[in-house]
Image (cartoon, rainbow, N blue to C red):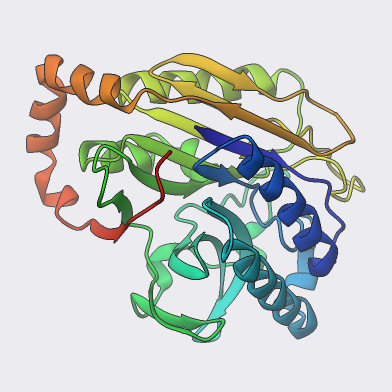
Length: 303
């Protein structure tokens, strides 16, 4: 069982956002979810603009991450949250994967939109700008830092997930396409996709189509209430798809926090990939790319 949390946020208020996140984490644990995903830059809010370059905000996000880490100590949940992170004087838009007080890995965003209403290139640098693949964060050393990380349950290898961030889904070849060929059965997206007319239908098409083509589950968490609406608006669009089929979807434009869950049949996904022999042919054709992925092993408490 996976879950999507759509919390209410306050712009540049990491402590409030951490509290909202941990409240939804408790709900996800009560519903026996194994993994819960939160929106892009959820600890800071997405619409901070040049406040992302303020030291107080960056430090506050690290303190918020530490609070959430503490909350994971007594929780069986794999928790994935978004935050801005400075590494080697470069600012990255990141997702952090947390489990049992440990940071399993940090994933920087691959593609930064800098067109139309987007200005991410003003504040952040893309994943390929990183100078190293291990970092120290919140007192944890040698934390994997890459956009090519696969997280595999050692006691249930069919549970292998990959994390990408918002725009990564919208490009011609999403990074998750290669991750699926490399073995990921669950694809995760932390998003802050804003609202334009008809955009929600296109989001559904993207998620449905990718989950179907990749024979995978796709777990999508979109930013919602609390983001600054000075220039844009957000609808809190969360979705869970399995092999092209919608398992759960949030109520858009809802002010209260939301949590949705969906049960994924991992064995079905693995068997579908074996039956569809062209899936393996595609993996062989792209093996030079797939061997660049690193696998992070962990042992979750399975129900």
